[in-house]
Amino acid sequence: MKGLLFLCVENSARSQMAEGLARLAAPEGLRVFSAGSRPTAVRPEAIAVLAELGIDISAARAKSVSDIPPALVDTVITLCSEQDCPLFLGRARRRHWDLPDPAAVQGPPEARLDAFRAVRDELRRRIAALLAEEPSATR
Image (cartoon, rainbow, N blue to C red; front, top):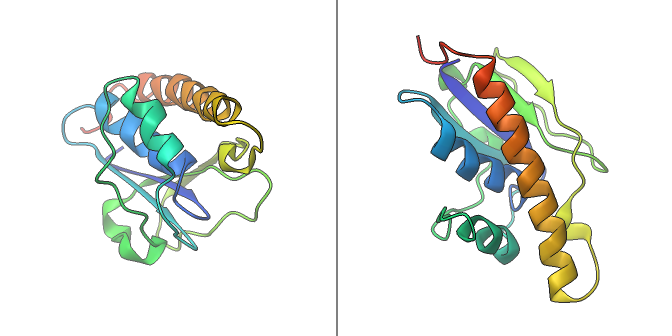
């Protein structure tokens, strides 16, 4: 694996958290991206729950899938559940992680943060497993 893309619709929560987590865990040389088909703005809750782990994505911006150079990506992970996942037209291995959108959770701020934490923790677990099964991720 040389280039990893996390893809969802808005590139505001799940894919941004996945990018931040994967950048921290990735071996040297692995390029990590995130993007969406209809990018909006990075959710403050995503920034907050990654900050709890010491990961700063406060300068991150939502990006369109068309901004990602296809030649740099060989693995795409879509992170959609209730929406139609965007397509990546480059040649890449594809995986789908059906995770709920924490931005859709209604309620008090702590309940919303708990939803973001739950998705963050699941992403962290899956990213660790993905990188463990790719021991030569950048060779």
